[in-house]
Image (tube, rainbow, N blue to C red; front, top):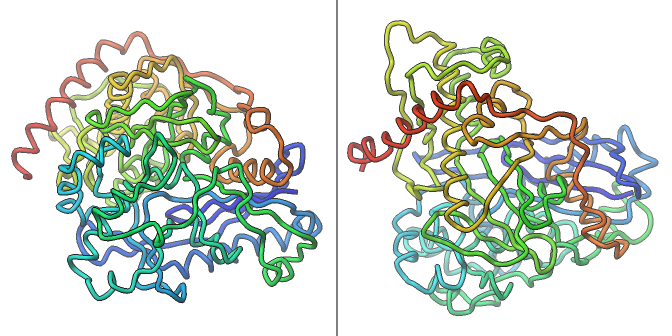
Length: 484
């Protein structure tokens, strides 16, 4: 048996698979986000451990015999979080999360140093790890002085699981300290933020062995024998392993808290000015490009909280047949935007409201706004040298057929639906655990799921969608002038 642990923003998912990659069962532990100030987003690392204990406890309650047979564990996690530890591995402050934008001034300062884009292949975004450390150095110098290790969220879980300070390439590529082409820490970039390699975890590939499960935890969970913990992956690379998006040109769209358009690449193809992420993949000698929007299902959840209707009820009201855009446009910049704008200050808007703008009209606009934001990502990836002919949909938002039809029409490409099953980050992490424990060929393990169906673009609406997208594109510069 093999265990995948995915540390997300809203919870930890634990998934058991067997040697044939059949999913045996899964369980969850919940997490909350603290937002003490506008633009801030934090979590206590101790809560990650509690949620992991909850999730594994759920598996133990229902699959005790299977859990006992675990030979490999893979880790996946939310990227970019700054988990700061002292010399005794004690947490110095709450982790600053991926969607925290407080360090936009520091990010701009680092990004103006040409070495960062040259070596990392990426803009220094406020959500990345390096500017967070620059912010801590400026605003919390007494904490910065005590920093002995900086770990990404899933790698803090690894420390608890194994006692090892380790990370891997896909997650570390999102720190702004990795030489992404060489797959190694850059001492030059670390020095630019007052740090050195001693404060970084040792790097391995996602498919490699990254320590062994501590005997104390193995005993507590009822696991016998030695258990390998794989290098693992950042959440999007792990999802790609779960979806089999590992060969050149394969792509998926993820509708989670954030939205992602992800394409695997056989070579390193940086184009930082497009605000496309060029990161290492979890498999050796493989990279990927990724466009990211900060609010996907988060935008629908915000609309749900305002209207007092559940997200499922709101999308049900729309039906499954895609309508022409109403003229109401929604900009989903609730906590700034990453691709293609790299703008931490911008905020969302409804434009074109009238007396007839019912709740259903607003829901439609929210879904279309996210669809158009993903179209922005498609255009950015295209400018960076990647052409996408179809995508597979994953994430909670992919349960809405309406939304997927809207995305297919906005992108002008078919959207494939995987066969029943969970092929997300926890499954990808479990696959990496299997590879690390058995030495299996990564490409042979990370195969795509069967396609259950395909949603084609609605040809009759392509003109209306193109016009609505042009309106959407024109609005960012208009509201930017008001908000900056």
